[in-house]
Image (cartoon, rainbow, N blue to C red; front, side, top):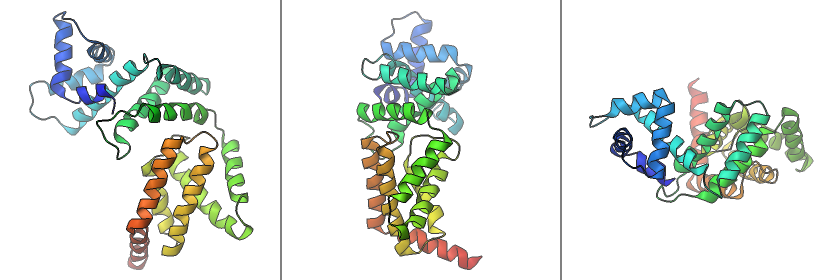
Amino acid sequence: MHPVIARFLDVAAALNAVDKSQNEDTLDADEAALVQIVATDPTLAKALAEARGKKSVSPTVQQQLIVLATKAATHRLSQDPAIGPRIASATSALKAQGASDEEAQHLVAQAVLEEAFGFAEDPDVFDKEFLGETLDSLTHLAALSQEQVDDWNDAFVRAGKPEQRPFRLKVAETLLEAAWGEGPQPLNPEHLDDALERLSGELSEAELNTAAGTLAEFLGFLSGKHVVGPTRLARLTDILESAARSGELADDADDADDADKNE
């Protein structure tokens, strides 16, 4: 995760930055970013105030503190010579497609948050390249139309043998419904889990293992369209392969069968 998130997940560190600003002490760049966010967001300022003097905070306040740390990290990244221009490009593309400035900033912050918590990677490492890939994909995702998505889906289906096409269609549509039902966004492990859970209710164990391979193939296809970066592709493919090796897909199929019987 980004060092600013790691630093300000500690409530005491966040409160110390605010106290320093009120006492007119010198702030470092990270503290200045956090104080700026607090000054412009009453909800986050209130959450930080509610955490003062407490040994533990409510889940709601804790979530707000994570948002605060993420926004501070995003602000610092906007000034980074490598990531800043990619943030600017993603924000511009999102706004060009009708997103408000607030919505565009929220989606960029979500990308920063995902880098920190979205995958089972070492939280002590900040993967700048992965975040950069995600920001670049936002630029392409922002411009997607339903017609283009339909064309991609058709192209993927046609790439299979005639007898495979209905199956490829089911798998591709299931993933797209799970991931992009409310609009295109970066594909993540939850989308895979959702797609596999839906498929487990319709497919046999053998078919589910085949579906995992077809999902991996579809991810590769989408990577060629620049909406899935190479690092994200590798991570999601590893998740599919690991699930197949561990027997999780078979367990999902069995659970689905049991549910059908109980009904």
